[in-house]
Length: 393
Image 1: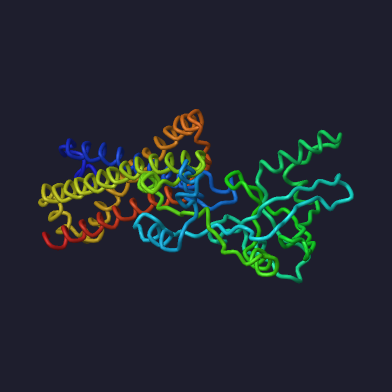
Image 2 (image 1 turned 45 degrees about the horizontal axis):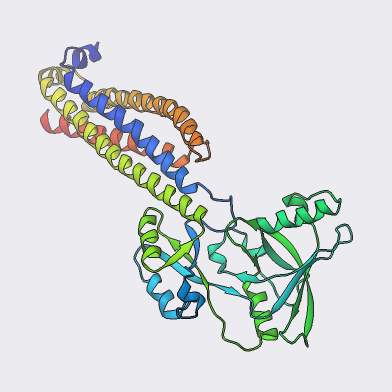
């Protein structure tokens, strides 16, 4: 009876407009937050390198071949790149300054030996557990990260030898060893090694910084250590600026790294724009609903006064207005959530068809944003109803 008295005989045009706006805003809000999170996570865990990280080197030109230009990085060059606002950090990729060979040392695997070069990078640029990525002289073995191309070469060798090829997990169980020596081969040392991860982005074996320091200190011929590669960690949504910097400075990176970075930056920027529009839409539609509540209370001034005179407490009437609008926004958010799942079905398929294989799970951030939006609106509804009833009547 009270609901019919207060809400039924009202002009619903403003309410319908606000509901449609809120529905669209909520739908795009949860959709944009969900896919913004998923795009940022894209590629995470697929490689040992951390997110938004690329390895760059200077382009080799004819003048470089004739030793007219340098292909290594000076400290001042690294600092200039690091000073850019869209660069999070820059660290050198340190290579061995001594001779090193790598071979199998497992009785179940045929002997395979190759002279190689090894490198090390700052641990914070790597997506690996810190307790696995350290070494000291007394350790049983050196943890290494192997290029996947090296594993392919090893499997080719094993296939040619008539031995079954090995998977990533089996390769981690194989025992290896390094042979460290100086240039004159007057000093030599053997150190056991084990694989703890693989990478598609680095062409050399990666070792902990402590092991590289140990080898360069003990077996180096004293020549100056040259830095020919650096690792750059860029801001998520500003990869275009990173790419422009590389072009201006004559730097290059692996094409796959550039493609992933460019794709994440472009899609991430798109969803940020949609997110901004969604927040504005939800905010404006919420204001329209609040204004409709105020208009509704104003038009029902006589009915509210009459109810209070016959014994209804103001808090009871406030509760009626609050529950009415909380239900409306609750229905709107539920419809928005259902529409999100419909969008998600088509968008996941579209991303997969386009080669962007993102996780299809639901993000807590998007659901949390929906809950926050509903909570903020219900609080605003309560305070508006409370102020309208007590101030006016």
